[in-house]
Structures are given as structure tokens and as C-alpha cells.
Length: 129
Image 1 (cartoon, rainbow, N blue to C red):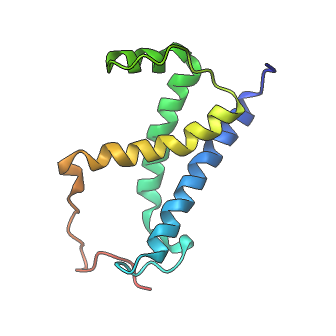
Image 2 (cartoon, one colour):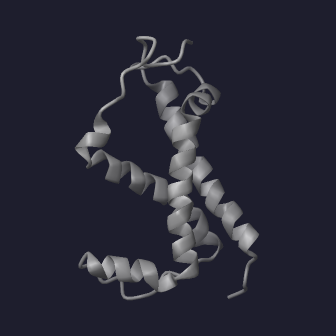
């Protein structure tokens, strides 16, 4: 297999992250439970949380990129034998970018204390339309 530049791999990883953010923004726009009316408003309102998520997931991707056995060893600790090292190439970078945020969503949903919202300062929980 051909070696790809690290920059291209990271661009594809970030593209996967961006596609997942667009999916989440689209779901928020279509929801009847909030006043977010565009993907731009979603990103503007949640930019800080999105940035934290991207950084956390990028750290995991960096570990995977620098230590391909790391993910295999992590699965082994959890009792799952995947039988092969996961190498980083163009496709896996894109897929990991998308699914890392999806898995983070799932993990956060399992931690009860993270389900609580901080009270709004101005009494509203959503941006004005």
C-alpha cells in the first residue's frame, strides 16, 4: 500500500469529524424541540463544545496513528479480540473521524452526571431565532 502524507490523513480525519457535526446540526435544525433554525446557528452556539470534542477525538486518533497496536490492545482489555492491528490509511482516517465522535456521543450518554444541563444565565436554554 502506498504511503500517504500525514497532512492528507489528518484532512480526511477532520472531514469525517465535520460530516458528523453536520449530521448533528441537521438533526437539531429539524427538531421541533429547539429554536435552532440553521446549521450555522448550531455551530455558532455550540462551537466550544464541538471544539472540545474534536480535540478529544483527535488525541485518540493521534494515539492510533502513532501506535497501531494501541486500539487492538484496548479492545483486548475489554475482552474483544479483533485479531489484527488497525492501520491508518485514507479510508480508516475518514471513518475514524466520523465514528470517533459517534462513539463519544454514545459514551457520554452512559454517564449520568453528563446528562445534566447547566442553568442558563438569561433564563433561556437556546439561542434566539
